[in-house]
Each structure stands twice: as C-alpha cells, then as structure tokens.
Amino acid sequence: MSSSRRISLVAGVLFIITFITAIGALILFQPVLDDPEGYVAGDGSDNRIFFGAFLELLLIIANIGTAVVLFPILRRQNEILALGYVTARLVECTFIAIGLLAVLGVVTLRQEAAGADPELAHSLAALKDWTFILGPGFVVGVGNGLLLGYLMYRSGLVPRPLAAFGLIGGPLICASGVAVMFGVIDQGGTGQGIATIPEFIWELGLGVYLTVKGFRPSPILSGDARPVPQTS
Image (spheres, one colour):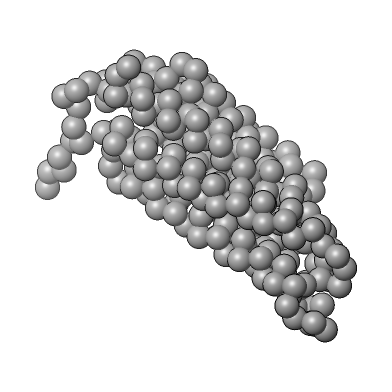
C-alpha cells in the first residue's frame, strides 16, 4: 500500500468516525439539552451523558486527525489554505470542548449541588447550544466546506462534482448559522436542516470515497511535488 493510499484510508475512516460520534453524542445528550432543569432535579442517567462525553472526546480527536493527516498532501496544492483548514478544525474542536464542559457541568449540578439554582443548568445548556451554532454550525462551513472543498476541487484528489458539494454547502452552513444567531430561523429547524444537506453529502461522501477508493490520480501526488516557492 502506497503512502498516499494509507493517508486517504486513515482520513476516510476518521471522517466516518466524526459522523458516528457526533450523531451519537447529540442523541445521548438530549435529556440535558431538552430539559436541563428537570435533569438536575430528577434521577438523570449520568452514565448516558458520560458515554456521550466520551464520544465527543473521540469526535475531537477524529476532527483534528482529519486535518493533520491530510495536511502533508493538501499543502502541495496550497500550503496557506491547508494550514487554514487545520486551524479551522482546531477552532471547531475548541467550541465542541466548551460545549462538552457545559453539559458535564449540568451533570455535576445534579450530583453535588443540592438545591442548585435550576436556571444555572438552563444557562449551561444554552451555552452548549451556542457552541454548536458557532462551531459545527459556522466554522465547519469555512473549514470543511470552503477550504477543504476548494483544495479537493483544485487538486482533483476526489471527483470534482463531490467536492462541489463542499463549495456549495460551506456558504450555506455559514449563512444558516448567522440566520440562527439573529433569530431569522430556528436552530435545528427546517431551514437549517435543508442548509446542511450539501455539507452532509460532502463530508459523508468524502469519508466513504477516501476509505473505499482513495485519492484520484493528481499531480500533487507525485513524489517530486513540493509547495511552489513564493517569489517577490
């Protein structure tokens, strides 16, 4: 197996892991997100939340892994944009980590803070919502959508029609995130759901394609390929 095929396989598997862990964690966190005050006052299933937290930790690792693993290849196309993609992934993961801590804070309130103000639990759940709006709901559009989509489209490492979904989905993700922020559409509503479809197709399609097929033939896969030096 060539080095480029190993990179594509690892990157593809990591993208698939991001889907599994992100969806799984969201489902497991629902008792806290839907009714934080009730969770604190009741007999919440803490182990369920802890398992969701574990999945989000794996999500963070996989998110960063996709960017780090692809960087040696993508930098041959455009080093600045490739570094921008790594940075965008780190920013996204920072938001995810903050949201994760907010959810665990609700669990701590239930376990240790007898008579805790239920409004504090509500505030922590609201913080989790905001981290989703600003991270997966906005930064993803810049990183996975625009930057990664452009690099894959220009390099031809994957079919260009597939990469086009990233170039379309990225701006839609950003626009829907801004619309949610200003109250134009509801978070998780129909409008935001429709806006995420191209990005969903792009990221899942990319993960499956890289896992099954690997990179398409491209000049940047040549062993002699190097970043083009900048001249003044």
